Image 1 (tube, rainbow, N blue to C red):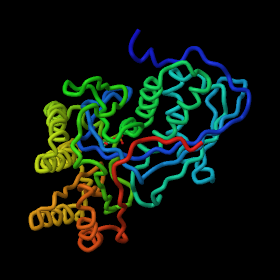
Image 2: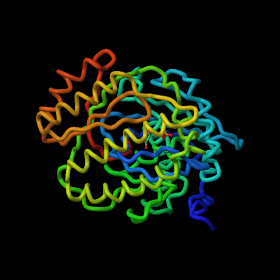
Image 3: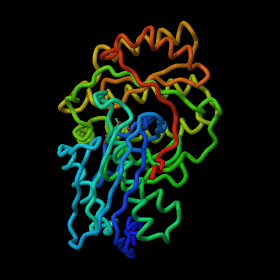
Image 4: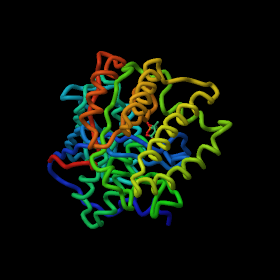
Length: 360
Ligand code: PMV
């Protein structure tokens, strides 16, 4: 029996009445980046992220018992039908049906909303898939209440991973590791685990302001980007580097050395984008204003000695990271010097959060 088999629900009952569940899930920002995957959403390298608090998806799952054994659902976004989400959700249900056969007993109505502006260009797949998976696991608890809390958490993360890789880091914990790596005990390729070691108080309520540089559709999706890591000339060295960087970050999170933190985090962001630029075909997701912002951050850090740094996800937007005790200075700097590089001067202040919440 493989570990995956332990997550297959075999004994379960059927609920005879209609019901409804609601969960919120936050987005997360990777410090050590996941880029490249194997089959079944298994990461090519381990990653570590800070969970966010304000950028959330809230999903209500209504379930209604039925007699056939087909996948059946309606999709709503803010109460209105949203057919464009259907293929992604259909694929998600197909991927999880062996692990969660009870889903075939119900017709679902899934109603989703985001707490961040929907035109913001922020990827909502991490929070969206985490919120949906939290609901599915809450349903599982109703039909099979006999497992441990740890089991349900791991399985929620595993399901989220099958929806969108990085979503597995949005279930529980403020710092989450996904991907088996020697320096993190109990780390797994199947699900995210809460960072299990001491964390310096300087990282409490760490701040992340997301600068919305480009809200347009990305030219290259992350699915395609991951794919291009196959046969990439630098892939193996990069995957190895991610393991090394997680081991280093473990020590930095303990010591609280922000100089080392900044060097590692910014290097990871630029490495991610260098992988894109050295793929075949190659591509660039940063925009001129992404670079303007990076240079402004470096200048500000040099002149003020305030330990602010940046990271990037798979797009042009910039995440500005800084300790809570410099909130005022950095937020003034953002409003005065960085907002002008954002589309419609838009940015979102966020900070470290803790994962999914039941709103039922
Ligand atoms: O979860 P995906 O397939 O959208 O990939 C996310 C990849 C990055 O955001 C670039 C890095 C990460 O670890 O979140």
